[in-house]
Amino acid sequence: MSRGAITKSAYESRIDELFLKKNPNLSGVKVLDRTELLGLLGYADKPISLAEGKLILGMTTHPNMTADVWKKIPDWLDQPAAVFNSDSVKGRLVFIAPELVDGNIALLIVEPKGQNELQAHLLFNAYDKNESTPPVGRWISSGLLRYADKEKFPAILNASGLQLSGTALQNKPGTSKILTEKNLNGYTKANPQTVLSRSSNTQTASERADKIIQTNAATAKPIDALVRGLTRVTGVERLTRAIYARAGYLLDRYTPETIKAGMVSDYGVPEAVIDQRAMMQENERRSLLREVPMSFHYPVLPLIPSVDRSYQSLLSAQWRATLAILKGCFAMQVYAALTYLQSQQRMAGLLALGCAATAFKGFGSLPGETTNISLRL
Picture 1 (cartoon, rainbow, N blue to C red):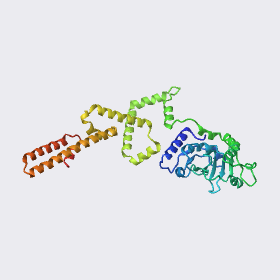
Picture 2 (cartoon, rainbow, N blue to C red):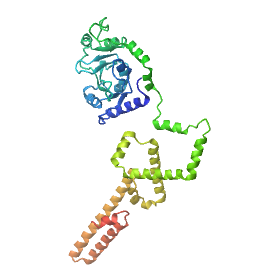
Picture 3 (cartoon, rainbow, N blue to C red):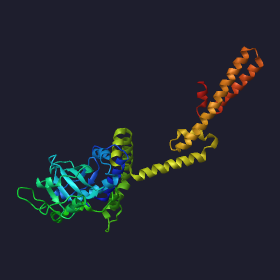
Picture 4 (cartoon, one colour):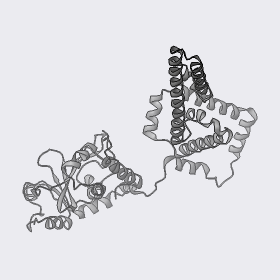
């Protein structure tokens, strides 16, 4: 395969995301790190990226192209049954997949880039011919066939109900030479440097750097020891550590949040940082629940984002229910007191006022900001 483990994992994860209705990216995911076949056909041996918008559109028009089918496409691009020049769009290539999709021939449309272009080759589209069979015979007679696997191509056509004549794959005067799997194997052997991208090493750059740093030298290091001693004696080591710490603080404080967000989006957050943050939040939550009395948990918890959200919602609901009851009692007693006083029943009115005062006092006994809320009734 012309892709590493990282490229394979990222591609398959992105296919799953797109089938979960994620928005397509303008710069699509990488399908292959490189392809010898395009190199054999005279194009630059560059990566192939996906036109993600076409995949989204094809979910409706070509329902047989499922996520599992799309995950096979890198293999099909690397070892297709045949490759034609497009008869409708100049410069594009039409790959015929070596497998059928629900009994139909699958076509992969690739838009190759020139040697001097910076962009990667583009997998423009992929679909199954569920309404009609491709005009393979006309394409061959028009001299559009560029590559054919002499075993896979006839087999895939026979499986779909098509047949080739005995001379269909022979080179004819006035047409481009039809390359085969033998030419591809020869090209691969003649360009061994391109196989380097097939390395199974999946270490990240930071992991490789850590490995180099932690590897001890096999010989003595007198110069390193001398320099380290001088830096400690002169205080240079302590000074540079303080400068680095201050520079890091200033950089973090004055860098705009949009730039920080962009850096995180492009390079991600190290897993060690995520784990450390999760551990810190869990320790804060446990420390809070251990130190704060239970009767005072709910006025404090909503102010701390590290506490479980479901627990906050439950406590907030309890607080609001209690507040609503006290509001109702206060309003009812005030109304009763006014009614009694208007009807000259002073004792009943004074008793109702006392009950209203008790309800009002209840607002102050609630924790948090209930006293401020009671003043707005």
